[in-house]
Figure 1 (cartoon, rainbow, N blue to C red):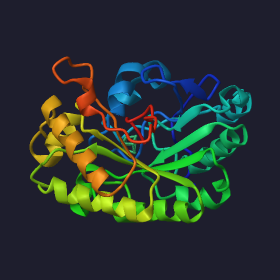
Figure 2 (cartoon, protein in one colour):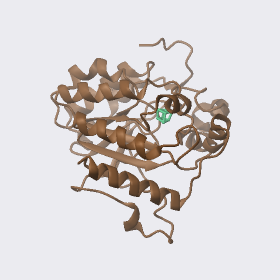
Figure 3 (cartoon, rainbow, N blue to C red):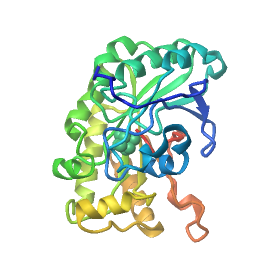
Length: 302
Ligand code: SF4
């Protein structure tokens, strides 16, 4: 694990499992403020700049990807969480950071072991290949899903929008290895970008990505459109030279394309709507769920 010395600390009150107040019957486990992956589109910075100053002060005023803090009392948090309370519940780890960042991987593994032992239905959401190291020791639990986030197969585009993460095809290998170990798998194609000059052929890219996920036999694929949150459009303008189009009609187009191609490849899929509160787009037209998969609480991840 990467050295922890010098990383700012904060105190977190037990339990580690929290109710996700925004989206249905899901719970989350988060144990860091900030995420060193620093993906350009990430929405989490918005929430920390609003709500995390009482925990870590002005640290969160830095640019996204340039602040990071961990709990000083992680052992207490693990020990004093009454895990049995969430037996059988859907728990998402993590919604505000990657739980398998180099600085967090050992802790993420220990938390996962605890949660699985107590029967929580745990989804580990990650863009990190470090999870592979722990998968043989996590295998054998029906209550575990490993969900890998891959927004594009286009390597150049991936380097632009998620510059500190392993290449997309390398992340597909994580899913292959999880399948080989008998672990339930998910993929999060998120965020699904509209066409931009750096990746014009959206259809071809998504088609290839979903084809690869079908070949691997991923159990379920989730997706959502890119959304505007906090400063993410500012960072994207800096990186791409212009702001990607983001509005309900673009979202509807992306949802239709995702549903069409997921059907084509015989994948179980869930589209996570972002604009359903807007009257002008009927809710039913931007959802596409087969076989009743529940949506994860988090799309701000992870
Ligand atoms: S999208 Fe996920 S992995 Fe990327 S910076 Fe945000 S929380 Fe971290």
